[in-house]
Image (tube, rainbow, N blue to C red; front, side, top):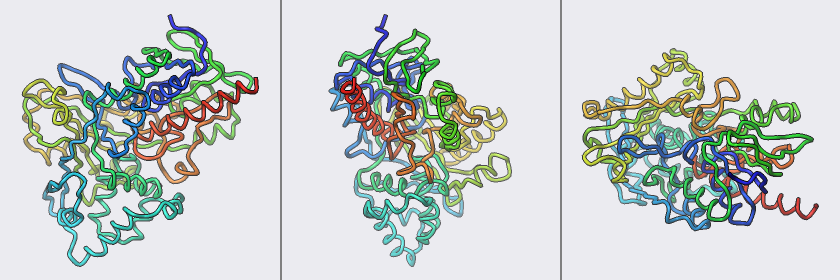
Length: 491
């Protein structure tokens, strides 16, 4: 049986929670990490079935150079417990105005030739100089200029540049839609541009053999090696609060006390369910309720009887695939096309152990609302739209399917994020990186309740998905260590 008193308790072993817990344990704090699932990883946990291993849904890491997965693993001395790979070769597909599907030509890793991309996107010769100048400006824009763009959307900013439609679709659908899972007319320009620079200059397309959950599992092992405790299958039922401060957690495996609780369960579920609205000022509660989530990823895991795809990952998009808020809402209501971007990943092409010999696993993902309460008919409409696009791009795949599984926002919510607000919970990332919720508008890591901190994609980080969560974990570890030291000094 674990001890019951700790310096700090971390709720949730996602990338932010596990990184933060590992760093604090190494720095000498007595740490308890509690996780409701049997495995760590949160929205990027690893799964296994019938000899196949894979991340729960499509997860593509970026940037590659100077990535935070390795930075934290090296600091925690657990880099040997995970194997990151950056295969380089990808198979993104552009559907042109005539309906023809064309794959991006292969280029040496780290040597993207804009003219090859422009040929692929069918950008007219008379538009090339303007497109190249825009691309150079986007890639090399100084931080001072980027910081002036916190208040406008990426759509508004890029529209002012008067770029060809196919280049707009490339940047929005192939890049930003999947990086942030919010429509471009809500996505904050500064957040998008900084992350695009990281991807273009430091490359994208990183994966983990055995699934990305192996990274979080390595961080959990670091907690143990540095004297901390990790409890799996220990769902947190309550964060104990009274007199303006937290004092511990109630879990399915018992009650544990600590003057500091770090929640990786999501800001809204933490405030509204785990702690309870009554412990916060109502103005803060209304602020929390007003925060917008990212949209959700819905798709299939295809278990194939034979290999069909020869690439590791890719994106299928067209000039019509970029999402706007209005089109997403109209599509969900059945009044507009559900044609959007489709992402795919082939784990067995970068990890030989991901599939039994002679077989292949392929995963897909496409946009849908984040509501776990979607009806079966609504789910089917979104799933069928994404699958139709994928099968048109890869017609040979359908006949090779041995088995398939659909994952939905309800699955995401059940595994990773309680639905604290109707229509929220199944979001792919967490709170959306939209105008007003990034940079100066990002929620702070320290709650207005003494000893309570938020970690993960909702607070403290920037950038893309899992690495945003790790950055948050690093920053929260620093903030908590300062808080802990100040509390001891004042005692």
